[in-house]
Each structure stands twice: as structure tokens, then as C-alpha cells.
Image (cartoon, rainbow, N blue to C red; front, side, top):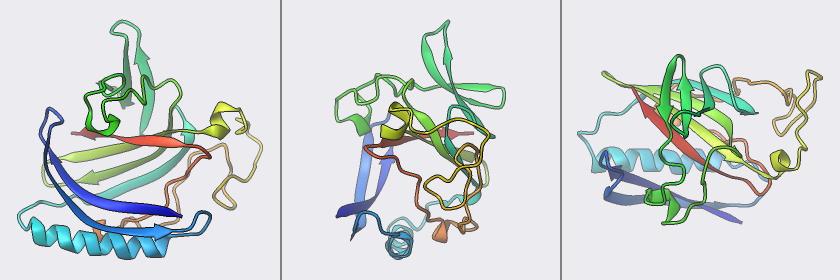
Length: 203
């Protein structure tokens, strides 16, 4: 049994938490598709967030792709700048340092270095949102048992992975409704004994 808790949190540019509201929660059993249950909880949280923050501008959905746990995919890639010694996210020709790695002061770490660098992390998904003046690119980075043990073969031969009928060795666009923020819910690909985090780039 797993419990998912949805919260809305506001941070400043120094990653200091300014405000936090719990919007809702749900539980589900491992191994079952929870998309419908998650959508109901998400939509209820979406409506409550609108009520709590009526002046908040909402992003519009623009793009979603599953990168199949590679270091590089269509929109973004992971890299390392040897000169600065800094992990980075590459978007086109632009480089964005990933200062979060090795910095235990970031909120998600709880003052512990769970992710000292990006060497063992791979790109699970990329989603893009847009507003009137900005574009928000979110990359979900993940590590897990299958990758660490070499169970996911990297070849051109078709093979089935966790998503039925999808070749395991290629990026793909999932068959989910990502046309509007209020319904932009999907199941992120998960690895056994996996962990991950989202990296945000605001353009």
C-alpha cells in the first residue's frame, strides 16, 4: 500500500520555503493502475489550489515524452562540465548547472546528500509547460535496480518494457491526455527500488 500526498508549496529563488498547503491524499495498492484514482485526487487538489490562490497564473501543458532512462533524449540531456566540475542539464545549446547535486541545504534532501551527483541518474520523462511570459521545462531524473544491475539492455532489437507494447530501447510519447493542466495526470515510469527527482528550468 502506498500513500500519495499532494501539496502546493511556494519557494523563493534561494529555495527557502515560504508557504505550504496540503491539498489532499490518496492510497493505492502496489501493482495496480491508479491513473483514475490519481486523476480524481489531482482534480480536487487543482480546484482547491485555484480557490486558495485565485490570482495565481497557471501554466498550460505543451509537451510530454518518456525518455526510457537514457542520458540524452529529444529535448534535454545530462552532461558534466569538466572545467567547472559541475553536473548540468543541456537544452539545445544552452547549459544549466545542476547545483542541487551535493547541496544538502535543498529542501528535498532533508539535510542529507541522497543525490551527491547525477552519475547514477537517467532521464525518465520530460514535460513542458508554458505561460504568457515563460516556458517551464521539467525533467524527471531517476535511478533504480534494473539500471544498476544492467538488466535493461541497450540494443536496437524490439523488446517489451514496463509499458505494454513499447520498445524498451527508445524514447516515446505516451498515450495519455496531456492537453490541459486540469487533466495532466499520468503514471511515471518506475524502477524497482527506484528513486528520483524533478529538475525545473524556467525560461
